Length: 470
Image (cartoon, rainbow, N blue to C red; front, side):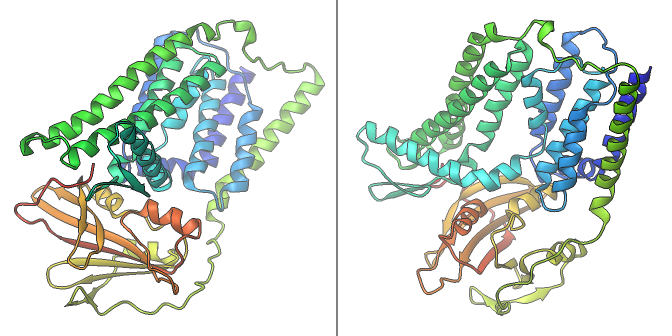
């Protein structure tokens, strides 16, 4: 009974301390700005726990590991990314449920599913999208040149004779990577693999997903450059089928590899960690101290997010003002919505919204590499639009734009965007997606300040759906 009271008190303190995490988690999962893949991982974990039909365990009382997570959260909550704080929260909650005896024993595959339950696909696209595209294009060039095709690469672009194939955002392989790691975690949880076996399967899944995406890109170079002639009506099915087939092959390999690790599973209950609580007066003193530490740390964690606004750093450059025209048309400024004004308050730069009679133009001036310069596709996805990626556009001035189609009901919009720097006395650099800009800015290859231009216009009746991008 005493262990039950301690475990319930711990769960209550965790729910209180991490209240911003639960709000962020629920909002990010339901607002449409991220892929709902985390829900799949969470439901899979619940199903695995239910399938094990373990005997109900006695509550274990307070868990020192949860206290450690609370202390780390208090130290990081003022500056750490929301994803890191959310990871601390869901791990603390899972440990609390474990101590309450509701989950039974948890294996490393289960903990990997807990991590995958976080809504992080949008963040992965931002941080890892461009590096994965570069890696895939580099491997694709190696594979293609093995077939004496004679291709070259620059960044995330592949050149074959006079043809250019851009490896755009949907071809980064983020979803393939997430699905491969999810499959590895699911198999590790079902087979109750040991920690070492789980790590090996997870690393194999990461490796397999990267190779699968590189082979997919290699195959699509043949398709997009016309090296293999495909009727126009088969272009999209073949494009999609190549991606599915390449991943399916490696998914089978992941399943077989996980099966070969099955002998490494942990089945000896004697090896399971068991907290040995001292008896007598020492036990009472330690328990009281632990409860006190929990109460203090959870209270501090709960109030830190509302103790006041964070300090903001003054802009290191002078804002030159928004342009009065764009592509030969006069711009009329549109008042910012209340939500955009609040967001602009902490944005490292300026945000302006304009109209030119037919189009909506969003101009963002930014003076630092920041996660707040997020892709426009995230905003439209959060607004309930379906996103359909289009080939990159090269306009009449020779400028490249990233593009997508946003559809909601009868409304269909074509959105194009680009980011470019001020040049700084050298050649001006331009980017068609946020991930490529972020890494170039972070590593000093592109120097600010930068301008991000987003153009929104009604979709033409017959929008060309094919292009040179995989």
